[in-house]
Length: 102
Image 1 (cartoon, one colour):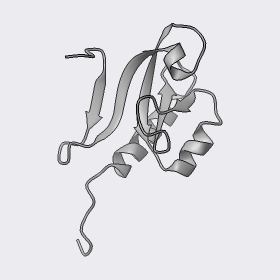
Image 2: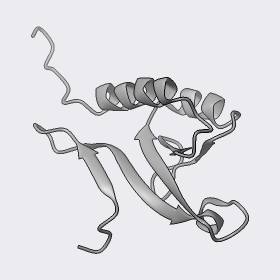
Image 3: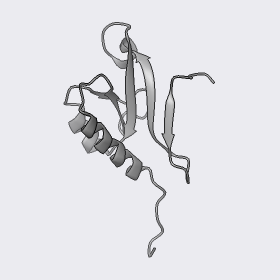
Image 4: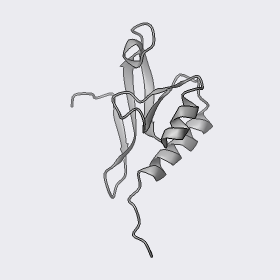
């Protein structure tokens, strides 16, 4: 395993990722220093990402499509309730699409 401290959150049915927890050096996130930070990447709508990135604790999605993914610092900057709500959004955005009429 290349990254034993990473945890991928994926759907059981379609195996799509809806989140990934990683520890990444600050300078790789566009921040100063080399301190290793814990982050959570989640998938959101681009307009939501634009709004989130205006708030402390939100960064461009690390190692993901930056228009569809956002990184959340897991250092207490972002409230746990907010993180859980956004994780729900990501979960629903990546769910298997239901066929029309079902």
